[in-house]
Image (cartoon, rainbow, N blue to C red):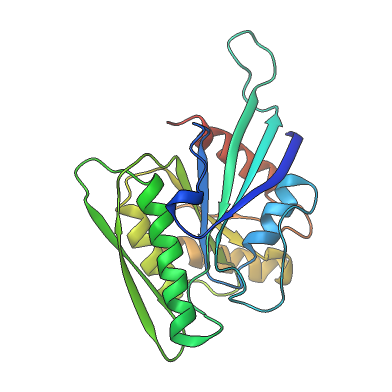
Length: 232
């Protein structure tokens, strides 16, 4: 896949800041320190997302517009051309700043899915964001189409309760989703294989292992993204 252009577009604190230009939006959901921004940079082939060693830094929905070419050809047989947004949502499972920060995370996530996630026959869902001391829940209204979701988990920590809860909640959206296990480069080959099997067992389905550092799995992830971006 050749990325022709990838750029940061905006940070949205509420529904008013979310682009409505008709392009597919693929939301990245995951724990605060799982590496969503690093993965976005690896996919883009350049640094468009700010990364931090401190979990809980992202408190806005950050939207990146991508134009890529390749993969499945179009009707004329020419390489496919794909334009879509990758949306880095605030992470769950950790919050710098305690209860107030968790409230911000819940608000931004709720605003985003309320603006772009529509599911026929489903009126709302619940997101729980927590750190070691607090739990915050938000009821998310679902009203408009969301293309797909990438659930990002850490391959080194399969089956975390927060990830399982996110999986169950994403299922209520009735939208295509892919579970992506990051940081496989941190594991030995044998440990990686065991970890991926365990993630698949706990997630009750296939998992795509990737490494933003080595590039492992990025081609396969691109294939999934192209499929997701054209699934509306």
